[in-house]
Length: 219
Image (cartoon, rainbow, N blue to C red; front, side):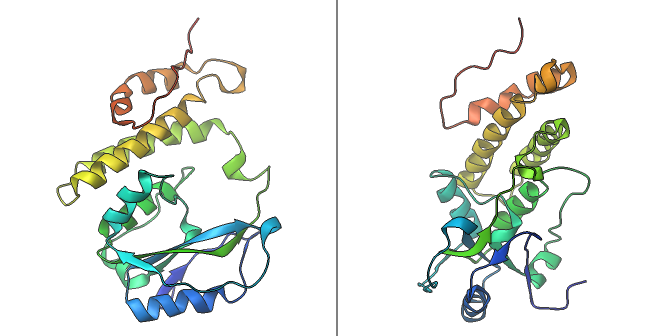
């Protein structure tokens, strides 16, 4: 339904930093990238005027792999400004009816972008709410994590992905696995279906780059 050349996302309780839109548009117009990935800051820490530094441009897969080796890639849609033509031609859409639908969308964004831009500037002003969906622990979010792991692992087997990107994506999925483990005894009782689902997917743990303590969920 969007009529513009670029797509930008914002949650209803957040905002953009002053002059951010002009800065993002300048980058898009001057570099002809598939998307810009910028940063965000807490509303409480917002001070001063943003200075626009030179962005870094490269392939989406290379950026994803490099970020995953550090603190991980940005998994939310609202730190991205995306070419509408790019997402339409690549058919990049959000899965419906699940929590964390940004996960699959973001991975495909990086996978398909021949030319992306990483911008360290904090254009987005994020307000954290304790009652928000991201910070809630609805049981469905854990089962949805399992679905995302399945979908993205299948995607990681695609022929058009670099070995580095595949390894980075699978490492990210191992982190999602540990998040899903938190739901094993959600609401004070064991969830046998989730336990069985996770046991069937233990193979994903071999792709983890980080040592984790073992989780014990049976007496």
